[in-house]
Image (cartoon, rainbow, N blue to C red; front, top):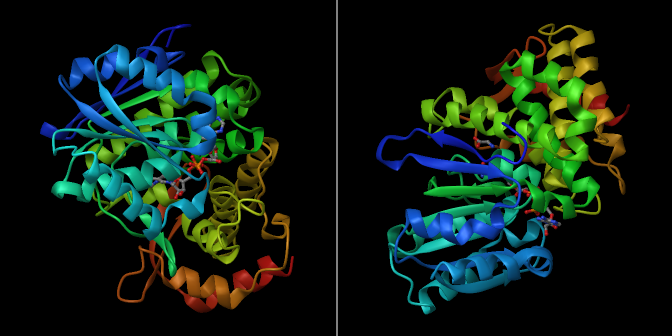
Length: 373
Ligand code: NAD
Ligand code: GLY
């Protein structure tokens, strides 16, 4: 990707294939890019209060200049917005605006807004057009691509939802400049994830380029584009997670359990931090099971730490977490099949694999060790 240029990554899904556009300052031309792909479109733009305060006016102007009529739906920021209450609110506002099936729900925000809006688009009128305009690093490299949508239920993360692919994704790398450093680091966990899953070359590149990526500019845009290429390839091969796509959940079984245990309190833990601790734990658990060398687990953790991310449960502020709570959350994971535990484990950097039927006794004693460390 050359300086100032726009990269297009294609997600190949037959008739439902779509483009991800990645580049600096794309918000200004978002309306034109959307209108050229969806002539005559009307839309509901769903966003959160923080993003609305920083970027919504420019985005809405760009839509209106391209002749796209759009209503705004502004929700509170944060993980607890992925709830039945806000799902109902957005569904009713979209119906009230008389948007039709060919009209779009546009997600303008991070993964919370993307997951909730995509679910709305998937169920209103049995499926409306859906467009993702991700504004966090996490959403640009992961959640806006691949069509997983949904909300949390009281029992756990992302337990209610549908697969509903967007028709277009537009990622303006410049909007990331307003992200809190903590949120940028959280998104970086998902970038590192692609290296740790099956791209040791990408992981080495990240080890060299991490500081530049955090500064912005070309290295950042390249890291985003490479992450999208990695995700697009997996989604094209296994859209509905019947096999290989499960690898994208590296660190997520532990991470989701930690998020639930802190009741999605962002003061204590945000999603990407949970994934970071979860990936470090998946490596350590793999070492404990004799599958991975200790030095590889330490190398993975060292990179995450250098990015300012937590890698251990005791770095989560507030009251101590309990093993029974984590075990209960893990048993509700979507990958559990016939009550057998499935984890993404690893043989080393870039050598993740799906482990079915993980021994709950070994898991419990690993958690006891982790929580007493
Ligand atoms: P988020 O949407 O809560 O955004 C994080 C914070 O950043 C919020 O407070 C938000 O208001 C703020 N923000 C967003 N854009 C900003 C900007 N440009 N400048 C300043 N602040 C900004 O969280 P997230 O980390 O983007 O996403 C996490 C969610 O994504 C979780 O719910 C997770 O389960 C989900 N997820 C989904 C998938 C998927 O495939 N669907 C993949 C990974 C994660
Ligand atoms: N973030 C996991 C997936 O999209 O499959």
